[in-house]
Image (cartoon, rainbow, N blue to C red):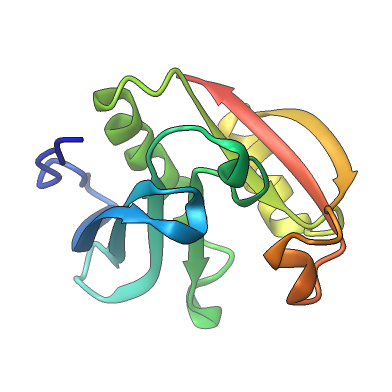
Length: 147
């Protein structure tokens, strides 16, 4: 896979600054991953995000996108704003759709998925042998968005 230029992933409110691009992450079924810092318009780091490129059995439960916002910046829709930019990169990779996975009771992520217009694909129990389950996760809500 060829990694894309990511310098365009910014707007007046948020910028995604590439930290690292990894060819194949075993945890995600060998999928390539972009890791970013999320910066606000003042240049302050407000969180991190990643795009896991492609679709495979492992990514089904992990999802393609993960955003983590620092507690003091939560409630300002930075995950939504960062994900909107990640969608541009996913389109550059011709992914067709992206998925986001969260615990069934995670109101914050569900709200972000709703703001993005994502559709709930399913709510399910994680397989007993899945690494997320081994770390204490029990269930998942899986959202998808055609791009």
